[in-house]
Each structure stands twice: as structure tokens, then as C-alpha cells.
Image (cartoon, rainbow, N blue to C red):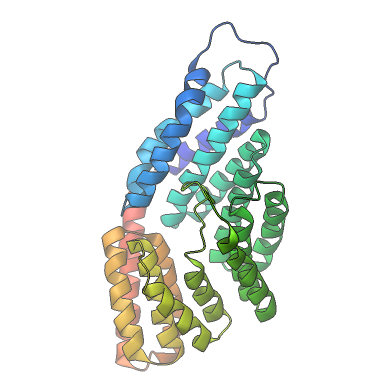
Length: 336
């Protein structure tokens, strides 16, 4: 996961996306034709592998190889139809690349991936995919606590999603993420409206997501409510939602994030027994998975422990989280 290599590939692919296709049928099909035929199935496989892997970074070499092939395909002379299909594959796979970098806390590179994914999806006229790429871009801004920056990106994502497939869950996922932006800006009423809007996903039937760039089915809404209410300083509502989330079947990464938020809730209440119990459980999962996503949630625990540092238990928890941060940073710098 060499940063310079990734940025170079992003630049090349971005330039190729901007080139027009041709209305003239090609006499000799090349790599592009093969990619159009096999690419969708391979992309689906890579998303499944990402979901099943405890270490998300382990999937990157295969993703990088396929991204290189897609760039090569875009560089060939091709019809408009073939180019549009390749752009859809690029928009799909660059969202996955962005997820891998996001999980490794490499937010600038993840942002570049999401921006390119949005551009490729726009060229493909894949509105749902385009809206999801914008939403993932906004997620980076949320985790950097730039809520006022995230809000207009999400507004744009909502407008794009309205042009997509109404039977898919895209617009409801956008609403769920908008709730986090509203919570970060301290607007309780807007947060509740967005969450209630996201709940409407349960009115859909049939295949409402594809398990890849769109995975929202409403099952994460308890977690998202907990995140929002914690940000709004409503520990009563946050604990109810997070406890509900913890009772569900969660991946190690998601479970670790919920545990970290319950630890933050304990620190906010000055309940160091609760903070310690959940922090230790989250640290264990963070160590097992190498997930920067859990680590980022634990950073919030650290900040909430600062007013309690006169107590040795708070100081010890702070040091343990810091030790995880140091180990994660050293590991990531070796691979990114």
C-alpha cells in the first residue's frame, strides 16, 4: 500500500476517465472487453472478501492489481458503451480501495479514492453508486470532525440518490449519515428527522442493496443512533441504542466500535468501571483486527478521560489506548 503508487494510479485513472469514447465499433477487442465481461463478478468477490477479512488491509494487493487492469482497459480505444461499463467498474472498486484506506486511518488517500469513484460513477451515469461515493467522502469529513464540510457533500449525495433506483436503500443510507452530521453540529431535531427518515428503509422489499458499495439495510441504525446521541450529549438515549446494537450479530469491527462508544459513554458519566470494562473489550478487538476504525472510536474515549486523569484508573486507560495508537501507527507506516 505505497502511497506514491496509489496517488500515481489515481492520477492516471482520473485522466483516462475524462477521455471520450468512440461511436465506431472496434474490430479487435482488447483488455477492455475482457474486463467488462469478468469485472463485475470479480468486484463482487473482492467486496465479499473485504467483508469477511478481519484485517482489511490484507485485501488491498488484489484490489490494486485489478485497479491497474482497469486503468489499462480505459487506456484502450473503445466504444462509448464499453467505456461507460468500465467507468462503473472503476467507481465500484475505488470505493472499496477507499474503504481499505479509511480503515487504516489513511484519510487523505481514502478521500482521493472516493472522489475518483464519484467521478467515474458520474461518467457511468450510475446514480446510486455516485451517491454512495459522495457519502463515503462525507464520512471522512465526519471522522475529522469537519461537520460543516460534510453537510453540503451529503446534501449533494441526497440529490443524486433521488435520481437513482427507488427500490434501493441508497437515499436512506444518505439520511443515516446526514444524521451524524446534524449531531456533530448540535442539531437534535434535524438528527431525529434524519434518523426517522433512514428508518423508512424497512418499508422496502426485495433486493435493497448489493452487498458491495451499497450495504445499508437498516441493521446498523441502532449503532448510528447511539453515535448521534453520544455526540449530542444525550447519554440516556445513547446507552439504550448502543445496548440494543450490542445485542445484535455484529462483525468484530462493528462490535469493537460499539464497545468503544459504550466506553466513551462511561467516561462521560465519570463511571470508570464502565469505561474500563468496555475499553478493554474494544482494545482486544482492535488488536485482533488491526482496525483503525475501532482505534478512531477509542480516540474519543481518550478525550473524555482527560478531565478524570487525577484518578489512576483513567490514567491507565489513557495509556493503554495510546499504546494501541502507537502500535497501529508503526504497523501502518510499514505498509502505506
